[in-house]
Picture (cartoon, rainbow, N blue to C red):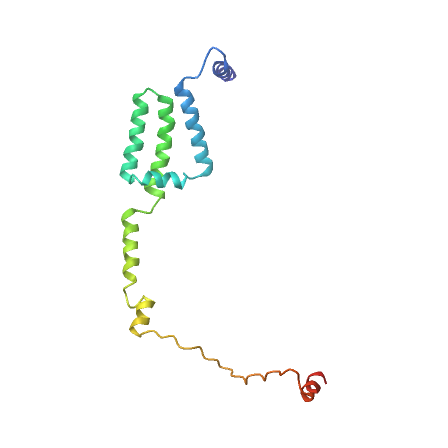
Length: 161
């Protein structure tokens, strides 16, 4: 085991071996994968950007990118990006549950509710079925007498004792 680790370290960091573009791209992919795993979610901005293509369109675009990586013989990068694509597709199809048809149906329902007399306060006021009456004060007091300036001697004696 130690011999394997030694050869791995020597082969990786020796001066005669340089990283191929495939290995450097895969290191970037692993970095992105680590960021996504530590955040436990994909950026909502990225998901919204992908959903502008619709769910099937985003799926085709992501899988097409994988095909391009495989045909370019970037196999390490293909493997890392395949994991990223799986995470993205899971978030697009499962976690990001706002479907376009459902969202459209809810917006149409909200618009139609404005014209339903049982739930629209504007229509109820217009029909006269809802009225706004002034609030009732249950404990009616006598209005306080106003203090006139300069106060009379009786008022001064009453206030000051």
